[in-house]
View (tube, rainbow, N blue to C red):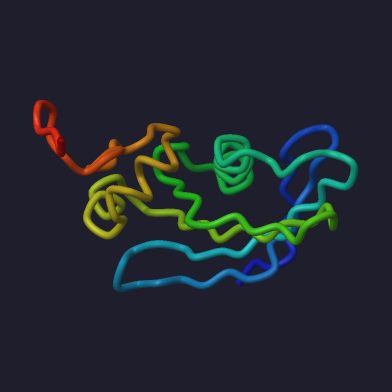
Length: 123
């Protein structure tokens, strides 16, 4: 295991890999990265994805940021990231909403305001 890998997200944001696990069933690496961003906001998923891909010499399309959590005011975040060996396994194991979130696209939610269809009045 290669714990302690340094990840440079930007000039002001750096991280260190705290935990790395090889998941042979899903054909992926599951890593936890502690990100230090004192004085700046939480880094975006896109920034994290790019930095992890560069640190592990893989394509950005093989990296999925599962979760980013920050304690208010601390300037330290913990990111859970999966790195897949190929795109087929990524598509097979990652839920669509995670892939949409990771790509920066929003899913359209059902429903809406009200609850009555147009043209149906209650008067």
